[in-house]
Length: 127
Image 1 (cartoon, rainbow, N blue to C red):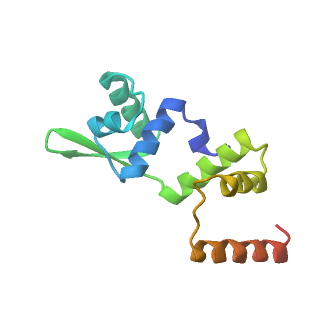
Image 2 (image 1 turned 30 degrees about the horizontal axis):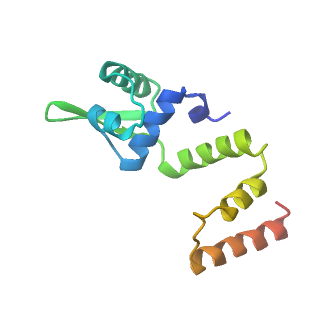
Image 3 (image 1 turned 180 degrees about the horizontal axis):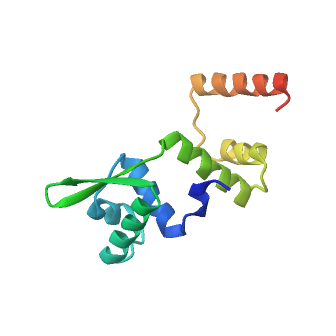
């Protein structure tokens, strides 16, 4: 299990907000959450994420600014794996098919070519 998957739901929500902006203060985290807990709870969770080494912090004026310690791509892969396992019984094919069948799957010609190339490569390597 990836370390990111061991975070609590609230910790993952906070990390999602911070990854989306690259960095964030406690106030920005609260503003970025759809159902934020109290400011005190957010600050406590941010401190815990620093202790767990998921975030670095630096001072900007009177506020602390938090930035992820892990690359966004790595965290994205972990999140995608979690979604595929939870909602598609571990089948990436089912997840991709569900996404492509949705109305929000507007893919550019470049993206379609890239997907086709990835599928060809996966067939060649047996993945």
